[in-house]
Image (cartoon, rainbow, N blue to C red; front, top):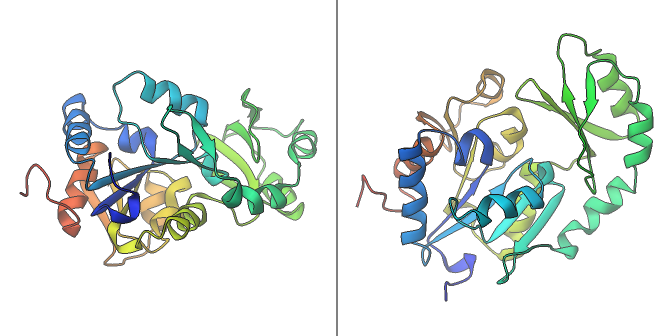
Length: 254
C-alpha cells in the first residue's frame, strides 16, 4: 500500500494535453514507467481542462498511470481517485466553487448563444461552460460582457474559451488541494504548456513550461528561479524539470 501524498518525496501536478500526454511515445513511456516504479515516493495529480469521464477512460486503457487526485474542468473539479478507480469530488473543497458558480450555466449559455466565434462544447460541466473558440470571428467585447456578469473568461491554445467562477482556475484549486492534504509546496512540480496552466505555474511551487509550450504562456510567465522553461517536449520536459530542481532521482540522475 502506497503512503499518502504528504509522505511522498515528490508530487507531480501536471496538465494532460501537450504536457503529460505530449512528446514522443518513447518519452511518455520513460516518464510513465518511472512513475510506476516509484509510486512509494512519487505522487501524481492531474490538473487538466478535461472532465473526469475522459480521465477515467484514459487511465482505464492501461496506457497512462492513474493519479491519486484530479483537478479537472480547468480547476472547477477537485477530486480523489477511489480504490475502485472512480473519480470522486471532494465536497469540502468544491463547496466554495459551487457557491461562486451558483448554478449559472444556463444563464451563461443564454448570454452567449449568438456570440460570434464561439461554439458550445457538447459536454455538460458542473461549474463551468466551455466553447470552441475562433479568434478570427470572436468579438473581444464578449469577454468584457461575461466579466461584467461576475465570471472569469479563459482562452487557451487559441481555440478554447472557458467561462469559470470568479477566481477559480487550476492554480488556486491546486493550492487548495495541497493545503487540504498537508503537502509542502516545495515538493510539488507543476507542469503545463498553455495559458490555462498559467495560474498553476505561478502559484508558488517549482514549475515547468515544457518544450512546445504556446508562445502566449511563455510570454506571460515571469522570470523566476522556481519557473523552468524546458527544452524537452511534453513528458521529456517533465523529467528534465524534475532533475533540474533535484526533486527526485530520475533515469538520468540516480
